[in-house]
Length: 128
Ligand SMILES: [Cu+2]
Image (cartoon, rainbow, N blue to C red):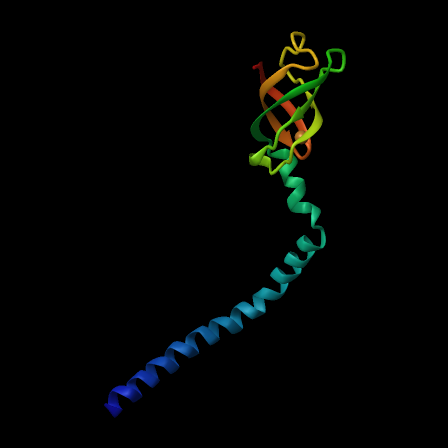
């Protein structure tokens, strides 16, 4: 039993010494990496600024509050948008390529839109 125990100790020591050697190496290379990470975390806007470039598609329903065919915008009081963790709110969507001439305030609508940040561009809108 003693032999087994000492073998285990030797194995454990061997197992321990190998990672230590690697740890020393990675510590040496970790310094510049940490600096890079610090630079990134110094600007918390960096991860956020990636979001607007990646448009999120979401759908919601709500009530049209205003239609501006000249500006090409529709203001909608919409319900919560779980995909974007948006609460219910009233906001103005860009119409994009959508024909909004048939909409009028008071219309109940289901709509889909792409969102970049708090900006929404309609991709589909149908009256209920
Ligand atoms: Cu909104």
